[in-house]
Structure formats: C-alpha cells, structure tokens
Length: 503
View 1 (cartoon, rainbow, N blue to C red):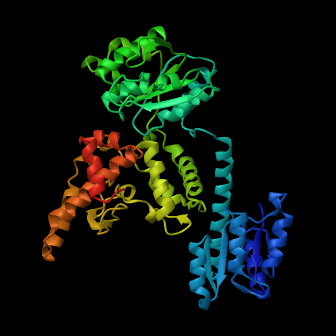
View 2 (cartoon, rainbow, N blue to C red; view 1 turned 90 degrees about the vertical axis):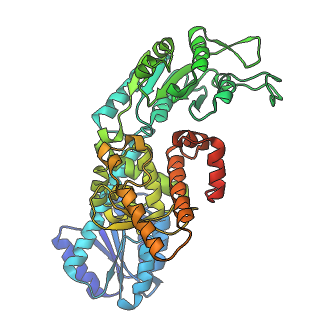
View 3 (tube, one colour; view 1 turned 90 degrees about the horizontal axis):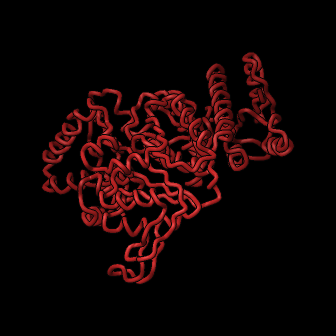
C-alpha cells in the first residue's frame, strides 16, 4: 500500500500521527510545508506507486497554505483523498475546502482514535476508487458482471461476424440501443454508419418519409428530395427502436424491404436498393401484439431471426455499484466538475431500490447526485426522494420542486416514488399506494389554512410540471414521445412547457 502523507510544520503533530498510523500498519511520509509536497508529487509523476494513498494537511504553515495545496493537488490528482487539519479559527475556510473537494476536515485539537479512523476511511475509499477505475478502464461500451448480462455479451460475440437481423427485447431504459451499437461495432459493417430511429417518437404521417425519404413535390412542403434513414444507413446498421409501436400500414412497407431489399421513396417511382442490416427493439410483447392484430405476424417472424433479451436492472443488482461509479464519472465529465464518490451505505440503499426506469433511471439519479449532493462523498441521506421512498416513514417530508417549476416544497410522504421514469413498471404495492394523494391533501389543507386563494392554480401548476418533467426525463427530452406516454397531444405538451416556464 502507498503511504499516508502528513503535512504539518508542527513536529509534535507529525510524530503523534506517524506513531498512531504505524500501529495500524499504515505507512507514512511526513513533510513540513506544501512546497516539499509538490516537489515530491512531481518526482513521483512517472511512478504512481511512489505517490500518496491519502494526504493529511494542516491549513496554516510557513511556506504555503494547505488550501492552496488542496487546489493544486485536486487539479492534478482529482481522485486523491485530502484531509484538512484545522484549528477552530480556521473552521469556516476548512468547511469551504471540504465543499470544494477535501475528503474531510479534522478540527484541532483532535481525538487520536477518531483521526486514525478518519484516515482509515479515506484509505478504504481511495482503494475502492482505484479498483473501480481499473474496472472502468477495462469495461468500455457496456458494463455488467451479472450472469444475465454475461449471456448478452456472449451472444454479441457469437453474432460478431454475422449480418443477421436481431430483435432486442427488454424494458424501457434497460439499454437496448447500447446493445444495438455493440452489435454494429463488432460486426463486418463496423466501418459503415449506425443510424437509430425511435418509431414511437415520430408522428405517423412523418414516419414513412423519415424511414424511406421522399421525392421533391411528394407532399406540401417537400421542396427538395430527401434521403430517408434506410439510405443514410447504407452499408451499415439501421436500429429501429420501439418497433412494436410502428403503424400497421408501415409494417407492410418494412416487411417488403426486409424481404427483397428494395423500397420506394415517398412519391417516387424508382426502387432504391437497401444494403442495410436491421436491428429492432421493443419493450412490448410482440407475440401478444400479433394475437391482438396490432402487429403483422409475417413481419414478426422476419424480425425474430435472433432474439436477445436484455435483463432489467433489478435482475442484475450486482451491477449497480459499478454502473453508479461509471455514471458519476460520466456526469462529472459532462459538467466539468470533480467526480463524486459514493459510500457503501448509499450503494446498499441503491441496491434495495427496484429501478422501474432501469439503467436510464440510475443514470438520471447519478446526474442528480452530481448536482445536488452537498459533499464530495455521497451518503445514503443524500439520495433522491424516489430512492429513499422505499423506506417507510410516518412523517411527510418536502420534495424539491423541479427546475423551472415553482419552488414551494410540496409535502409528500416518504413512501411516494417521485418521478419514477415508468409508472407502468412500478411494483403493484407502490402503484396502489394512496400516499401521494395524502400528501396532496396535507398540502392543500396547509395552504387553505394560511388563507391562500390560489390553491387550485398553484397545486395544478406544480402537479403538471412534475408530470411533464418526469415524462421528459424518461424520454431524454423527446417531447413527442413524452406526450404519447402521457396521453396528450404534442401541441398540448408544447403549450404546457411554455406556460409552466419549463423551457
């Protein structure tokens, strides 16, 4: 194990910490000022084994400030846990440093067993992050150690030299497009384009043109000839997501393309040859759709050459920790901030959650935590309301209003799963619970008792805002698809977004 670096100009502090840590079999290296530390870090730049496992630094020292040292270390070594030692008079600045990236602060005079325990915690966290980073470096496009995911990986490997049509089934948010991209990447068509289209997100009257293109003058507004997705995917792969929602008449045209490899643009008279591999995906039971007459049986058999079933996240709970760390790293990179760490207790709490929105919901939770968690180390209490809601609670608590909505907290019982991406997948017990209605009633009573006369408008706006934002989160911002899921028109959702200030 790498040593604990101790930085303090007080020889007695260094001596006490060195002896206490050596008793715990923790190696140490001591410095008297920040300049020495920075020089040692530069010297160890080519050999990571010579660097520190954890850095413990005082704030006020001759030759430099511990806070300046923290800034410089975080710029070069963002994953290194730094513990700031501080006298009472420096407590405010130490707390600021804690918020800005320090692992923890240790007030002086400190209790020695507590100091050792804190350093031990930082060591454990550092080692855990090192293992996670190694795993992430070795696991590129998809993550999964669960047996069900290993079966998917094996199937992708077997199909790597094939151009056969594949049907991917699985719940919404389980990562079907990632599987499709992996199938393309490891196929003979890898150098060709990968083109994806969600057939449920495009209005029926536009979908035919999106897929097959149109000739100039084919309909009002068709000013020029346009190539469709089949032509855009020439020599590559076309991914048809939510194929179960494709209109029945378009299913006939798709069947013809899959059968003879030719199609006509809308308004066209010359056939176009399609050199495209088709991968389709759906969250629906296509056999049942065939029985109900909503899906062509011959098209189903044409698509169902090879079927891959993608497991829901609740079926691969052992993958939650690795996925969580991966998404926290991704979120931090996108936002340009330091990646946050997550405690074992928080991971344990996440593991008990059912994830009705699957991997997409976990990704959204990690985005939320990157922005909303107050410290660099995410504790269980920092998790969002829908995760904490699985623990029964007698007292209602306030749920933060969504961005762009009114900021008044709406009191809701903790048993409510707020903003679950797919209500249809929520366990029956949770879906049947009237807890949110009780919370609404409590809020209305409170507002009425306060003498307010805008209760209807205020609560309606907040209800509609929450509903629309939840639907948009489940569709990654695709308004038409969100409107379809909510059962409202696309014009309605656009108007509501404007009225509620959700832009």
